[in-house]
Length: 356
Image 1: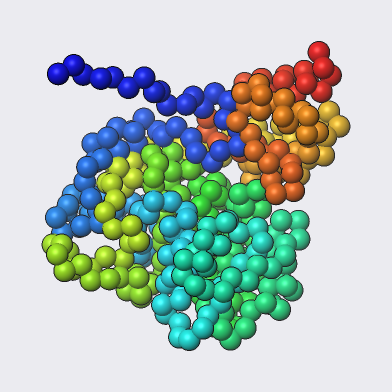
Image 2: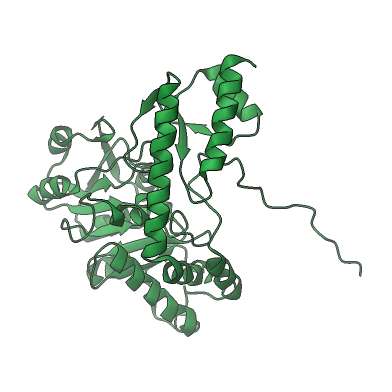
């Protein structure tokens, strides 16, 4: 029989500026291929990848300053955020609500719908949760308060110790969504980690800045009680219970997480953060010099208010860019976004602004 070759090729990242995905580290790519067919959802059978997953959780624990971490490698931030809501609901009694800033990722709206939980969104000030509004929104039925460490639209970090204090006044659990920011924040002065506040659960995605292969999200918990609240019996597997949401899942994410962190933590990630921060600051300055309104970057993410016709022209020229909910073009300085690529982008901005 004649072999049929696929003509499809992966899309190049050459002009991808708004995505939080990036090519994996070579070691992570190789590890993902080797463990592609293993199933960490059945650790009793797939013992090697199960041991690797424990190593991945320990590595992520070091990054977020959690000495004895519990958790697993999820499919991504959406699953991890849903699991945080699910654990809080399962550990509470009666009707519950979840309170989050309006800057929280849209996965929390999915979680509330799937789990039939009330979601209360509170306003932000300069992209960070409004503490007065948060205090007014929480009550005795609040099971979970969400804070964000690196918002997807503007890269803002909520005042997490203050949020934790408010959550504690009603006995609510605290979840921090650091899906994107978690691999940048260890090299900043922000208070965001388990060492900075009584955080119960956290999302941190190796397949973003961590340079693991997609899919590889991280769900971390301070204590085993959280995983117990998520576990279901698995009578036909060699293992007796399962806390993950997806069940069968590829070992590619687990193995690539370990490989990427072993290759890059901490020096490689620090170097990547410093380069991204420098590039974001440079780009913001160049755009301000051209007369555009720019949201000052806190993490390496630049939002700029460009005329609609310029945005459309950039898209037509092949730039993969998206808007914030307020309409700004957003540029995420991921590892593949180089200074040379940003210079090319600015050349096209100039061309379409001047019409030459």
